Length: 464
Length: 81
Image (cartoon, rainbow over all chains, first blue to last red; front, side, top):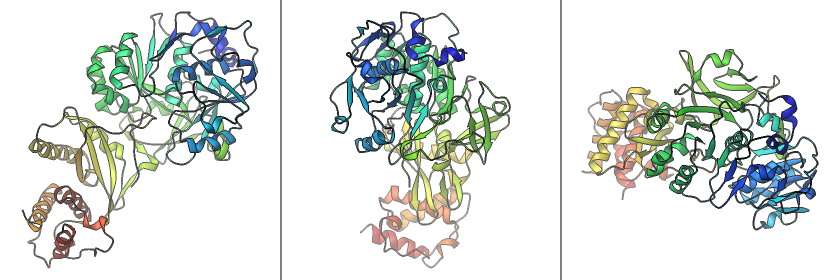
């Protein structure tokens, strides 16, 4: 673990003593991270941002990364804007976070043109005459991945964001890649891991097709790669998957079921495959490295890295040094923790023997005539069928039971004939009936060419 | 296959899947005495939507809640017109 003194240093200072051969890449550019230690990407505007509450509103992940490295310890606040935020919510976010400056990398949206200080970030680094003077501990504001309305903003410190990052174990060069956007919690973890591990990082560019991204990851010799189970299932369907050979495959952000873990193990027989459990509010809770879904029950008994976990009414609660501090803006009075300092994750688990398994979200339960179903538990069964790549289970309104569950399924290879589809539908239903009580068996199955994955990397789910 | 025969065929299938036996059916048999419980009927309606392309019980507000097997079949015969 880093010492408390190191953690209190701004990112720029923490990077200063590290290996000089780490680069951050996107499709268009590559930046040597060491150049930022005594250089700037902000075109002479760095000093103007000191003590400001700065909105990072760049189009590219690379310039966002550069701005974050430069402004930690300089700005009072950094509000990191993911690319998919509804422009109609910008006003409320800016007011709620008391934003008075913005960093962009192209055209400035009209909603941001009135901010007092504006700076432009580019991947060309200009040397600085003197390293910038630090300000104080910068607050990092992240948006939570809620579904509707103005997203909630949570405050993190860099110390909390990097609490789960262990020092690099081996001297072998590491090149990180992420299917996640680094402007959300899961991706930000990978950005910080790469930065503090003196590793290179390959970022995707807006609108880059999966195949092209995979080819580029291969060209950079990716060794560590992270994404949600939905990202990985999509990648496994791409012929380019064979070009990459990561040593470490990481999943987080959604339930990693046994089917996706096994598929990744088959695709990358020499890789270590780990699934991490984290949330924007609770921080990184744990990582599971034994290749099995769920997590050992002993995680609840012994705190790891100062993280405590308990199960209350089937729901995981977490007390952690990596947790967010509080909400700001419209949600500033909402409690982030219970009175004992535990964050309610909303993630429901079930114990089977010596292991806990994730069954779904508290808010995602489907009620079928009074019986409860988590869509994720049905998906986990369907996904075990050998011809299924991924599935989405959703409620369908019914006047007889309130709802029934129906499934949209993506096959590993498209079905050749209608007759085959009918047989396959029967076979999948039979498979479900063998593993689930009858109210959880889909009432209907549709075969679809693809499932929508939201900008958060998670399957796009809709309500009834 | 007529709408009525399609419905009977699918009813038998859902009953088989749910491990129940259908009663001898005619139009006057109460739907809930048919051998299918409300979950079975809800599943039946979802399956019929795939086969007949219509769900008369959620697409329209003025359909009566079916009491007998005959009511149930009529809802589809009206719904698919």
